[in-house]
Image 1 (spheres, rainbow, N blue to C red):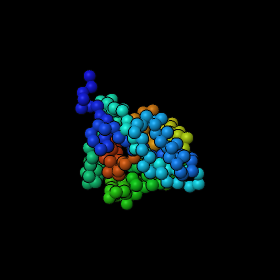
Image 2 (cartoon, one colour):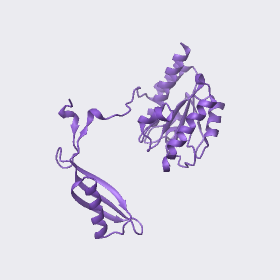
Image 3 (tube, rainbow, N blue to C red):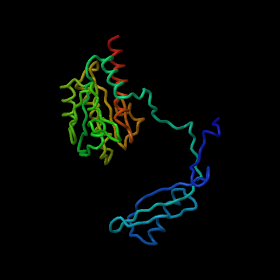
Image 4 (cartoon, rainbow, N blue to C red):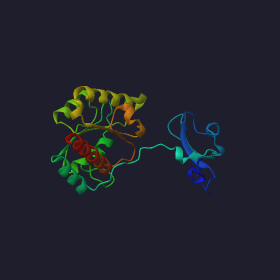
Length: 252
């Protein structure tokens, strides 16, 4: 039986009032008719007491809306499934110490945006020394050897480089994801790595991007998926945890 504390409803002005805010664009010129269409759509989505609070043209023949409304739906927190962090979050000096003590050599990382994806913002945020949000990227860590191959790298090129440097981990960022290209690309990478690298020397496969579901790692054939908001420190801590632990198992 689910306890009351595990069942919640959206909060707006008062606890449990069910108020939510949604935004969307319709291919309709701005005006009263467009606002009426937005209200109708919100009602069909299950919202009650609908209010169109913002409507603005976004190019010829399109209108952007912000709509408020009330929902009756409840969320059962006990049924929520997510990937929890199962490793300690380490400072840079702790990461370096763990690599030195656990591997006795530098941890080798190769990263890229694969396929036709030309957006390097994700891979650069994790790998480049400048990092993101005040956190330095993996190039900052003394005990990491990092190769950033940039954008529009083919799977074959990435696998070839990973084999050349005997990578401990391969990091892939996918931002452009039309027609689920990110899923296709990652499955192709996973298959290519399994074919090219013996199981005993196979690198960790780590992917990230805003459209990935972190629960799909096994289905895609990768070791870890990082979603929106992942930081270099989090990725570095995971790599130390996974690579060093795997090294100890192999050595035992």
